[in-house]
Image 1 (cartoon, rainbow, N blue to C red):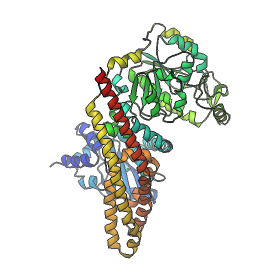
Image 2: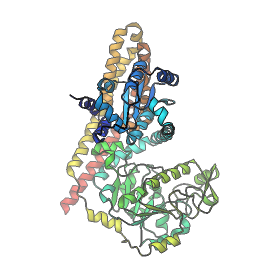
Image 3: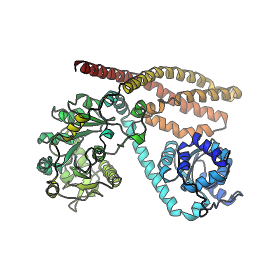
Length: 602
């Protein structure tokens, strides 16, 4: 077996994403790309690294070359986990082709490996998941001498990613029960509605107006009435209230928010008669009550639905953003928009107003307080400044990043009192109307499309989802018993670690095996990372400390404290999940029975 075949077999097992990169890398001689890593131990570099590493258990190593320095680090720091990133795909292929790296690639403390720029974000995700405090960042000598600017940029990118990662975790934690319930309760509706991906580019070349709820919308309501025959109008979240109040029916209403406050937004029967795009995270009762045509979107962040439908992120179009307007923009892009007009997207408090007229789901007292306490200023399209706050600033950054990610679409900001939006130059609605007057859109364009598609329900998929729901609900009871068995062992672990170390060592191994049987279930991560994200994240951060601890009494204390607490938290969630699963099954059966009656009548 060649070096490449041997190394590739291990990569397929441990780091399949890297194996795919090796597959796709050209098989060149690479005579112009040379290894600079010496065969003898680079003592000066290792001494410099020692001063950086300290007590941190996670080391991010920038560079792999032929793995010699990585092997030295693994030998010198047996109680650390290495996360290694090699930016040069061709250089990595040369290394796995010319050298037997099997022992290195199999080493358990080489915890993660990424190769090439496309795998940098997944490296950031893994680092953010497991590191507890500051990042220990080490670069191979080659990159220290050649790419200092790149190294600084990567460190800055990681800090930005980690900040967003932590914010997302706390957001997930805040809405964890709501979102998990919405994911599970939406399964039935998702099975019986077309996805946004199934309507891909159905309106190629169209102009779409994405309507938000900012104060500027009030000044452009009449222009929106005039524009409706010429553009697709998509309402984002609460803006549907303002539109229907003024007699404007959006071609599509988009809902992403998972909170019950949406019952107030969609309280009017007129709002529930518009075609609806609901995300799997959105409040489930709105989809239940909607009387018109529906489309669904499973978010890239929704691992629960992805598990039950057997999907992966690459098959999905929409990813979460800071605002429902971001969801509406992605829906417009999926439908094939060539131009997107942003209306009512103020991202600030022009004239100390929060919403346009007609938005009534929050009390004036609540919105006035937020306006009065707004601590920041942002440049508006008139060249002056509006007050704003951190939440709107994050929304603005998120929208600007989304706009930058869609370079083939022309964006225009029509919000005449709102914040400047990079990538969306300001144009007043009257000028936009002159542009778009020649274009025409059918009054019920999206509703007609959904009805024309008439996508048949896959009853095999319905049964498969139902079977998974039932099996998972039953397996929750098994986990309850397995947790009880682990706790029984744990109750004696710390005492035995001090009095009967051999027995304690056997107990540690048994606990690790029993925990592995729980955590390695296919459905475990999607469900429990959804309903208890902070608890899982905190355990992930302490896991390197537990795994690399060799002192038995200390290891036993760590297992008792951290795994014991996590198991208690999991056990507390099981009754809640069992209730959710039972209701999800009931909803699916009700939908299936209703569908059967309809087909029988036909």
